[in-house]
Length: 223
Ligand code: SF4
Image (tube, rainbow, N blue to C red; front, side):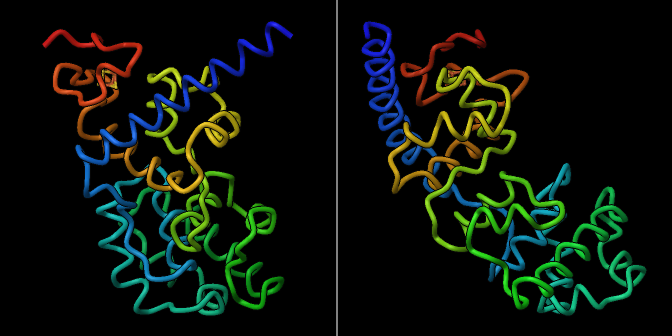
């Protein structure tokens, strides 16, 4: 009973801290958004497959032409693999990624009438789609309030003491009840921008950090 009470008050304290973190980061990074270009759920799904361990700006350059040529899941599913590979060859692991796109789109055509499903359980049945990708698609293309745990969300949640877990799925489950429901997608964008601009992995810029007073490690850097 006593440990349950302690757990609840810890969660309440974290919720209050997260609200303050969000407010400050909104002011620091008003431009925070998903950096991948897309106009519909299929384009976002394809961009996310291509973006694994690749720079968003490179992916955007490649998808600018790709999305003009292939507009539906049927187009990707029926395209010859060498032709598709040629379109994305500037991106690392392009052969594996081409195969993932092809397999994923084939399933979308076969089982979902060519439309990217808007339910987590359905998305997770697609080849190559894990929780991170599924949640980012649901959050950014379908307007659902999800938390997609990418490298920045993972690192900053740990650094800010919001989770003790290292497994992205467990981090998502830790964050979901703590982050205000309407702000979950925004929260992820804010952590991504803060992680790139200020709380960078190797030498975070603590003295310039707007959430320094809300961070358990405010002195990670001296200058
Ligand atoms: S105070 Fe330092 S460690 Fe904490 S969030 Fe800011 S930059 Fe990161």
